[in-house]
Image (cartoon, rainbow, N blue to C red):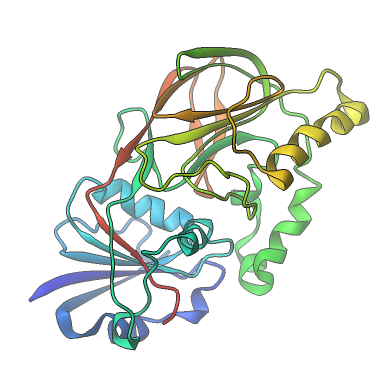
Length: 296
């Protein structure tokens, strides 16, 4: 009989909705199950199993995929985080799945994910971003997310409406962009941070997208006013055509970003710090058979 590791992140905002018993009933008697809870076991190892059920948010999913993305393992994702952007992105697709024992037909697929550098644990399921607003993904307190859900992020929004000046050179698609950036984002998703902004998203393409917004000319209140227009254009109106200028939006199969100092990135909602120097970003196809289960 096949083996399945069930991982439940008890720190996830909606973790109270799921239990080991629910997952086992949902997946049926096809597997022998092993149970693992985070944070009791902060770094579960899914290697050696035929399947893994990930119950948590996008950060939990990314951490698990980083260990098994290159292995033909069934990955059942039960999204019980706060934003769950990766799972919500699947709603656009015909291959979205539901609980197998509740009449849903599993239609797992090999998904395209991102990777920063050549280190295995630098995998991101859908987003790798630095700059304005991006710390919200990892600064909201666990107790607030569990109590208030997505509202836990609201209090962080104005706090993170800051002028960032990330000194970087970005090489993407044969073009090079240098200077100071308020936002640098590599994304494989139609949505991020709750906004359905990426109208150029193509599930099957081996590419993702680069979105970069240059820093405003001024500091202080005037600079924040200058920031509003490009951020509103990108996230509220959305982007489809490639563009250069204050907003840079390009299809990316791979890219290189070079920093002169350490920079904090948001990797699927988790803090990830990269050092100074050159960092290669690329999009690859995972060998995992990936399914999202929202009804359980």
